[in-house]
Length: 221
Image (cartoon, rainbow, N blue to C red):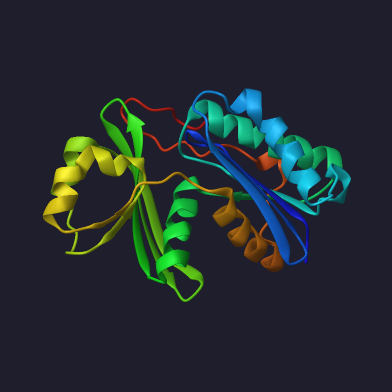
């Protein structure tokens, strides 16, 4: 099996995972505004734990956002740099999808809604539907917090992400199953293995953070 390094820093969590054969090791630390300071320390810890050097890595995967502007840019820059310097393929996966996959793998369900606090009274909203181990459909957008109440959901729907706190009353009314967590590199690594098998790579020059447009949000140039 390939040695894949996975980096997810789109939230308050700085998360890194590495696979080596059947083994894997990950570090997931909630350290708001310290990602730039701590990321390379965590990378060294993960590599050392599995006795892997950078030159041994077969592919680099990262969570491309949406999420924290600084954190998403950091992961993208590191992935791009390693892909170029080591001449290895890069794998880019939505951070909202990573959150959905974490819950889907835990509960073995086929639909997950993702809510991430985008600040300025807005949320990143994603709906992900799966068929067995494959993503069947997905949608991602920015919505105003007040807009959430106009959306249609069913009783006992599953929601994940720190944005759930912003609409706690509405989620309680539909008896939603809620997971308040951040994207985890362990889940990114599992999906990156599938991408690697299928050859779903992104050229380093094409790597970029995912910015969902909104009234007060960045637009991808």
